[in-house]
Length: 68
Image 1: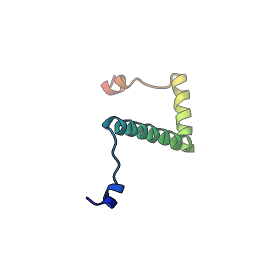
Image 2: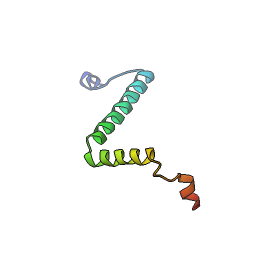
Image 3: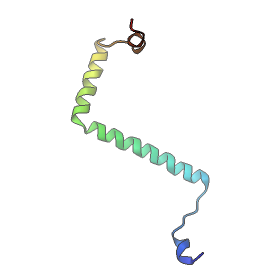
Image 4: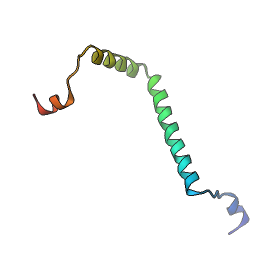
C-alpha cells in the first residue's frame, strides 16, 4: 500500500465508531424536529391536534380498528 493511500484512511475502535453513529442519529433527529417546527402547515395541524385531544375530540385507535 502506498503512503498516499494510507493518508485517506482513518482507524478507530468499534466503540468510537458506534458512538459517532449514535451522535449522527441524534443530530438527524434534531434536524427533522427543526424542519417540522419551521413547517407552518405542520405546526398548525399539530396545534389543532393537541387542542382536539385536550378537548376530548378524538377516538381511541382500538375502537376505530374494531369498528365499534
